[in-house]
Amino acid sequence: MPIRSKIRTIPNYPKPGIMFRDITTLLKDREGFAMTIDQLCARYSGKRIDVIAGIEARGFIIGAAMALRMKLGFVPIRKKGKLPGPTIGVSYKLEYGEDHIEIHQDAIQKGERVLLVDDLIATGGTALGAAELIRRIGGELIEACFIVDLPELKGGEKLRQNGIPYFSLVDFEGE
Image (cartoon, rainbow, N blue to C red):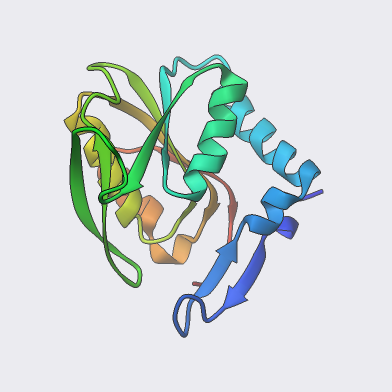
């Protein structure tokens, strides 16, 4: 059962011309969800990772499941104003606008090896912002991990240009 077949496409969301790759259909499929977590965790088996950081919101689901399976801690990277303690933040550009994310200042200890997780990489803005936050508080980002890559939007290229290795399970051509 290919994971790709469990991801639906919603045309013209959140604006005309965007082909939204929706993983909620993958998440509700118990075999597809389990296979996704199994494949992602297998990739990092035997690698030294201290903590998994997930980007709001779908990165929380995937990252937390992986952290539980790998017996690691989980760090949320959230939208502005959602974390209760002292934070640092960064603004960044999206495919269809701008946004701001934050992380607790004490979420990652200096030198901890961090795996960054989200559902999808498009233009790379969110992942680059999250990587900046992880590095600013002393984490060592070992890789950025996604279920879906939209290669035409060149987010993966931007990550590589910024010294960030990345991995995705499936590619979807077209926006």
